[in-house]
Amino acid sequence: MTDKVIKIGTRKSELAMAQSETVRQALLAKFPGRKFELFPVVTTGDERRDKLKLNVEDKKQWVIEIENLL
Image (cartoon, rainbow, N blue to C red; front, side, top):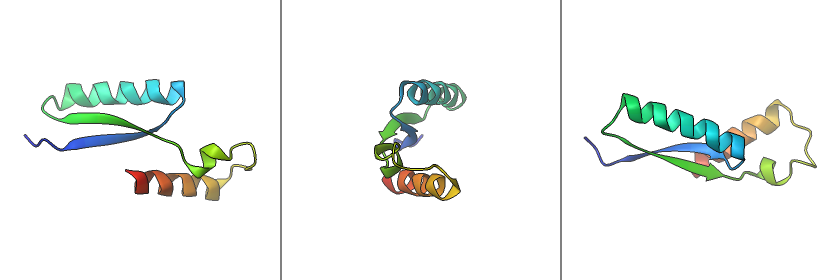
C-alpha cells in the first residue's frame, strides 16, 4: 500500500472538525492500509464572514481556496 497521506480539508470550527473526524474514521475502516489526515483551513470567507453576504459566488470561492490549499 502507498504511504501517501490523503488530506481531508475542513474548517476549524468544532462542528466541522467533529464531522470531518467521523468521515476520517469511516475511511480508515474502509481502507485500513491508507493514511488520512484532517487539514483545517481558514479561507478569506472565514476571515471576513461578518462583512460578506454569503451567496453562490462566495461559496464557489471558498471551495477554490480549499482546493488550492490542499
